[in-house]
Length: 295
Image (cartoon, rainbow, N blue to C red; front, side, top):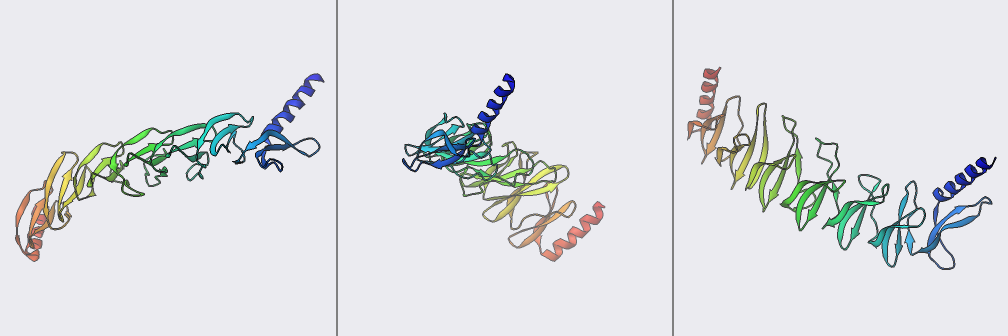
């Protein structure tokens, strides 16, 4: 019987701890946390001492305000994270992860674990990147010293802070035929392309870049001063310098190209097999001949 009494007391104590509700004290105007006693009356389990606060809900930790700053406490009222934060934000990508600001730097606090899962190091609020289809890992856009990078929800740096902070989406993820995924971004106002590990596929030398998809390689459109060419990430060089008036589209093994309103033909190796001296109709005729001979 004595052991049953002990168990009942433990259950009552547990219920008192976990059935806590934020309440303002009518006398002091301060906030604390109450629960119901056996008579259905509110009793303080964390005395009113805070200027504002949030309910625990299903978490073991919650934010409260003291001395004009917010901090994190546990259900016993113990300080877990110091009173050094601005008002916590609302979760946008994971209900456990709360956006916070400390000393004008942004991070994330995990209300399940009671820790800063992403330390407050960043210039702007962290933004979830939902277009990075190739990974189940949550990726966040972060800005540090006005440079853009990508981190995960633990704060691990995935893409280093080397790229231009050009608004809400400085990184554009694109699926490729090889299913590897690439990232379009800019560095010092020049465009380039990264793979999904942050390695450079196209150097940051161009005014514009674009993805070209083929079964056995990765080729990319490049452009400078409205002139276009092709860059090979396999060969790590321009296979077609950006000297043509329009982007280059192959029909099987050849492409009609133009320079100064004159037309010619390229092969897949980037060689100009017919010089740009023809009209468009003449170039199309030559393309038909080359394609027939090739077949």
